[in-house]
Image (spheres, helix red, strand yellow):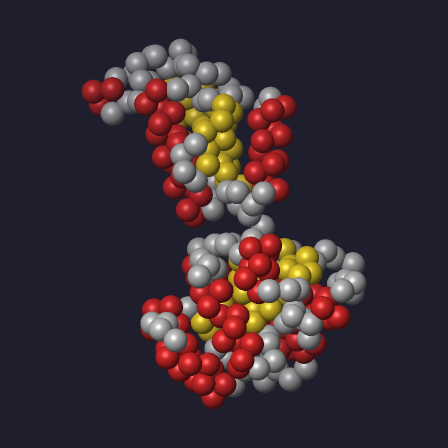
Length: 260
């Protein structure tokens, strides 16, 4: 891989942009590019580098975009002999490629830095998740560090800016462990405007019913509100913050696994 392509791949991973590294791993007879040729393919079909051009490369781009949807690698084999039978070329040889998706590291965006929020942050970090924790009470996040020594992004200030700074996207699961309905009503509209696949809210059924009705009164429809899981977590008779964190992260993992 050229240095420039490697640097671009690393930059894409750092910026949390999904990308596929397509590599020619084997060739036979006459082919446009030899083994080791590489190309980056992004979600929108943009490419860097080349694995041969023409119809074959167009198919590789389409297959790469499909690989990004499922987040799993795949192998491709093309004969380049007879387009009349569906071959993507006439070079006379054959080529095998390996598509390797680089997906953003899953993020847990924790809204609320109290006892439960901190327990979730610690467990999510231990599970290898990227952790972002926000609270409107600056004293709770200033200087906060995970007890394990792992990394956590800490945010405060307006929630709408925090959503942007956290980079809430399709790889982000939101855990809301807030202190009252008023705060939920302030925060949820901003989270529902994102494409986060999971938004879980801690609290009783009665609290969620109150919050939900006020959101309906504000114009939110059932489709939007069905995205909120409340009460959050699976039922394991959890009592302590650590036990509650286990129930929450178990639900997050289960939802992600079913979605993939």
